[in-house]
Length: 489
Image (cartoon, rainbow, N blue to C red; front, side, top):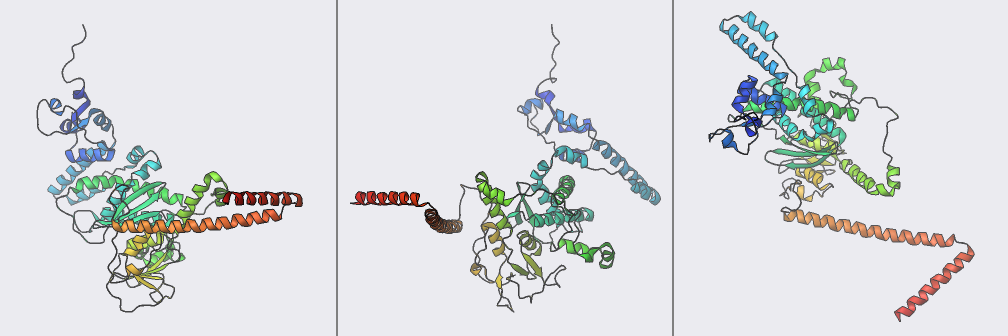
């Protein structure tokens, strides 16, 4: 006779474990348990027979896989959490006894930990890390705009700001922006990084106090993981472009000696302006490059060559444009978009550092303003509203400026993230029909050119024929004409 199976030792009862049991097993507090689950990527699961697993109780319960909790039991961070608990206890005891020397000595011995091993564990390869950048970038950019006096530490905000500026410098250097959309939440930006479309939000530059009904402990746990991840990704992305990391200005004025003279604040402001060239690591001469002529010669790669040519033309969309920004313009996003597509941009030197030319420059082609009227206007440039810039990016072409003049009623700002098969606004239908008509006209012109070229080639081929073959060819042409006349009678 076999061993009697006891109830609760097999099946769902053995596969799942409640959150209370997991906290007791790991000997953690509930906030620490939430944090370790966020860092390790472990989430609760819903059993099929939840009421039976809860022994008939209908009270809400959270269940985890037992194997996930067993996996957490071997995490080195648990030891660091225990040391932090002891550290807090010592600090409280010393403060209660008013032993200030002891407090300072204990604070110097504060336990520290790193999340490098967790990032390597969750993202074993670089493409895996790039695919998960959407949420990381949105959260880092959000915390980089938080007020520095509040519930969030200043060091965390500064770190997020540094990572955000580094990533924007990469986007400018790689020229990988694809779409831009302005909403009430902020600026939706999409860029192609290592073959993946990454979309994130850059909040508007408004000082908004943090709301009181949000659990910032959970958000800071995610932020701790994402800042570590983005640090690794930024370093790898800069390495692919042979850029110095952390980013440094290319100008000789910012050597180490002159940096002491100018100060770290001015140096940091110039980097945050996104309007400077970065230092480059010397590149090997024998690096492999794609041969454009070889791509064009191979018939199987004609489509690839055409797509590559179109992409290169889009990356230099604003190559022949020179912009000047008024004071009321959201400078950071505008500079990011313009420089990512090959344009030049500047602003008044009184409103910010790193301006490259003044308003009186005669070579300026576009002056971006966001006010109904402009006092003094130059006749050699176009005055436009910021939406013209975003619509040009989404339409992948330079649009006419007539609809975007200062004080004019702007056309609808259509979202470029609409999926196929959904609702299409009438304005989008008009734009699509206009583009289709332009493409058809270009195709007709190209066909006519091709026919002219083929007729010219035939004439040259006939002239190069020997006399005997030319006589035979003329007889064939004459007989074909005679047959065509008989058919037409």
